[in-house]
Length: 420
Ligand SMILES: NC(=O)c1ccc[n+]([C@@H]2O[C@H](COP(=O)([O-])OP(=O)(O)OC[C@H]3O[C@@H](n4cnc5c(N)ncnc54)[C@H](O)[C@@H]3O)[C@@H](O)[C@H]2O)c1
Image 1 (cartoon, rainbow, N blue to C red):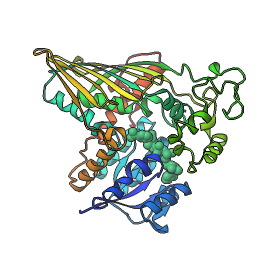
Image 2: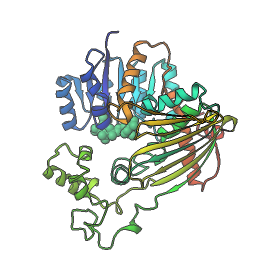
Image 3: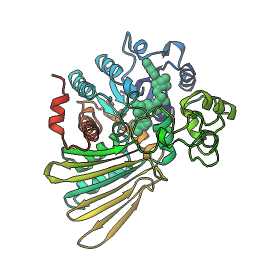
Image 4: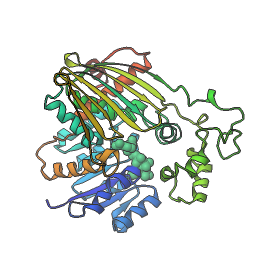
């Protein structure tokens, strides 16, 4: 196989901007041969970029997957609740699948997808892009090399960044768990996964607390209208005023809600889409902060804290081993390794990453294409099989949060939700 061909299902932010551009950058390795998206503006745009004819574009994934198999792989980038059906259909039609995370908001569907991939002998790789970054892959290597001895405990902080919180999880696509997924699954399945990856032992039990403490109606300023542009009395002092933000420093986010990036286009979108809503009067219900305690096999522990109220978007980690310690800040793309015996500290700064997620978006594509070319079985760095376990940690954490922090045993939880 000289180059891998793909169909793309969902030409939104992730499909069109994170993965499809790989075909334009490396046309000798990868080609998009068909796209499905009901959004006509997006479909036309991507068709021009990838020189697709009308019969290579489809309004829905059903239309695209109908008939003859069109490519080696299917890249599935629809929203969370629309992952399951196209994934099962693509696997059954013989495609290897690269699927956006989370696999599904329904644990039984995650179990089923993993099962079907094995049954059909196809790759089902989940876009846990962090595993592919210099930052996390080098941390993993330091641990595997034994440089800090046996891992005893890990602290991981996910700093969401306050405007990112308001954009994606208060106003945006992932603000409501009935429409997308609970925050711990939607945003932090990456973190459950990375903890699973670096600790490399099964997680046995979790407990969790968290709530939607700030972005709710009780904090709405007096007289604030439902939409910021309708004459809000606190326009100048509200951190989240949609007009000031999206016409100013948040202009880059406008791509999420309009194809017209002119000021008039953005204003129109703020008057008509959820992105113009007052953050205290949206239909959001996902938490704005959550903590999780975890115990892994052999007594290894981990604590995780996701919080929307931070100035930068980053992950900060401290990994404590019997012989030393690793500390790292993903935004700085640097880690330090400390040796308890020599008291020597090694500081490593990685090269500036190319592309999103610390270089993970491009690296996962490169890796996936290699895995497809050299396919023997379903093994992949972020296969559905490894991802299922970390998704279960997220589902169990949410269950615990809803039960006031009750400790949830992962194996028992799995048996309860597993389809018979
Ligand atoms: N890996 C990561 O770090 C990461 C980061 C952000 C988002 N995501 C995930 O990526 C997925 C997509 O997110 P996004 O930001 O690209 O969303 P998006 O809304 O920008 O894109 C989704 C696209 O799917 C299209 N679509 C809807 N129904 C369809 C159908 N029946 N057939 C084909 N296409 C259809 C929509 O029109 C839209 O263009 C989500 O599941 C999200 O959780 C992952």
